[in-house]
Length: 554
Image 1 (spheres, rainbow, N blue to C red):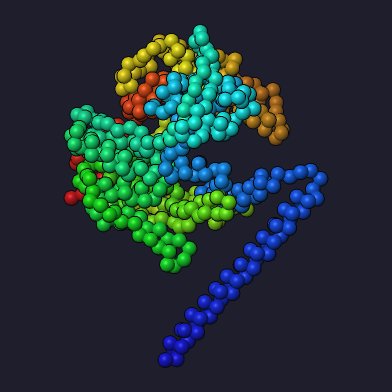
Image 2: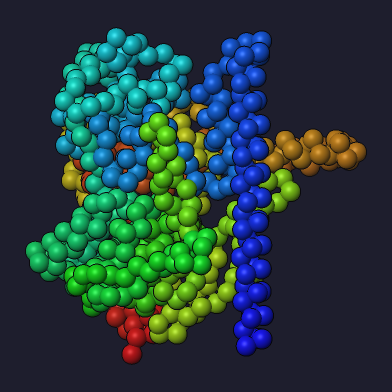
């Protein structure tokens, strides 16, 4: 009895201590809110110039949240459309990607197929001159332009544009806005040497993603006779956790645990299991991931890996094991905040960065592999936590040098596609189009060396070397001569560098041109020929012995 009383007293003391700590924390919060409120009032009443209160307070909010983690975000009433689009993939507008060119002008980069912009005749590369009564200047940015183009479905926006490389270059569009629904499944079809493998590319985990994947999978099975599947999650940043559970549930038995989340409190744990009969419980499956696969993508890939249900192919995923929930705030604001961490079936947490532990300068770093813990899959395969999902079959991503980076950054590939499309009414089917020697030669002629921002890494390093030599006191005629000789050896002309990088440039040019004619779906279909990770996955699915060996199937 005495022992029981002692335990109860200790427990009561713990509760009392926690209550005291909680009260102290609440007092500290209230105190600092009073200070902040008084500070804002003083600035508003007595500062020498007028202060934009909304902007100032939003800056304070964003800075505070940024100190926590990148995923805890505040959406004001003005940002509701953006918040809703993240979860539903829907918004009111014209359905077109816009971007800013190297000349500072805003142009239509890519109208989505079947949207108001595409039906109105907008083409990729059209330069936006005027929206309704507003004339655009180089001071306009993408956000401001996008805001003008968006609006309630049924309303009309008038856009005046300039179409490069054509005689009658000024075009005017009257575009009736609509509810734009970005599909989560950007493409699906058959693949493999015998056409018996299915391929589904998923770009986001919206509230409709699971239904789209299910419909695509059923069509591939019933109407195309596929016997294996590749699910492509590369570049997919995630989305709704529930959507991830539903998609994983297409491939595993009903009642299978996919993920569990654990929040701040001891009673906050939630377990997510599949609730429906699977569509393809036994179909050989490969999942493609890369460094852009995060959050819900990692739940799907990680759970299927832990359950030995799929072979994961590609590069290590991003490593986001944090769960966000939304909370409504006064004046129609929304706070999306991190409320839990998720754990996939083996028990591992794949969060790569601990934001609660920062360096003295405020920076954070990925958890080193040496500090990760080994877990085991259902069939006993070792897997690790703490750094994303490591593929079962690693396919390295191509190295991107400064030449390729500058071509993409300054849109040389897209600008060339605009010129090409202006003089070619049609091209072969998306799956058949290739960049011929003639097209590549035209691309090389198109790039003006005088306008190409060629900040080569070697040039920067040599410049730093010269500065270091002088600062450290090693500058002599002999050393200068050696650096000059090295600079001569490392100097390459633009045409030579384009030829050296032709293989990957063919992919960039082909993608840009195909999008002008066949939009997103065509671009994905065209890219499949260059897709090394996909080819590796298909090769593996055709080799059932190797597939079973990797998954330790008996």
